[in-house]
Image 1 (cartoon, rainbow, N blue to C red):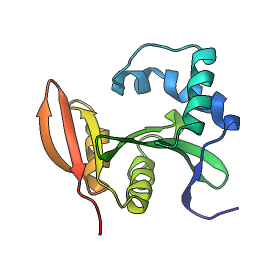
Image 2 (image 1 turned 120 degrees about the vertical axis):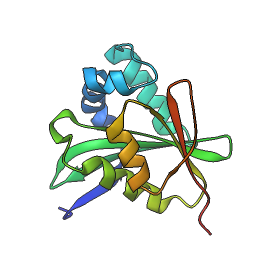
Image 3 (image 1 turned 180 degrees about the horizontal axis):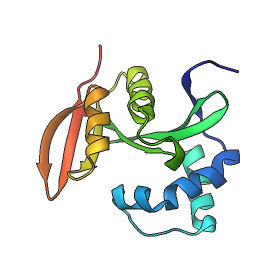
Length: 148
């Protein structure tokens, strides 16, 4: 077993926990799409996502315990990041660690969209080295240039 927090690629075996995290009320409130989703639609999305070469989904683990998930979607010449810390692991610094781990392995430009009231995710983006590019309509747009 690995020591410390690490990222591993998500698999279909993670479907149930990802579904639970996605439908958690606090997660939904922070998401662009706040609707609850069915397990069937989630499973179809996950199957498609795992085969999509433009999408990378990781599970953050520590000591064999799943802590959260981070995703990077290639679009418009940058990876768009999203993340979700499990309800049990929130407010313990894991979000900053897992997003920073992902940002460190991506050499291409990185973006993130965070709601202005989501102070935890704003701090996560800043800690991971993203800078505020602009804000509009209640969303803060963060950016990090490509690393050469």
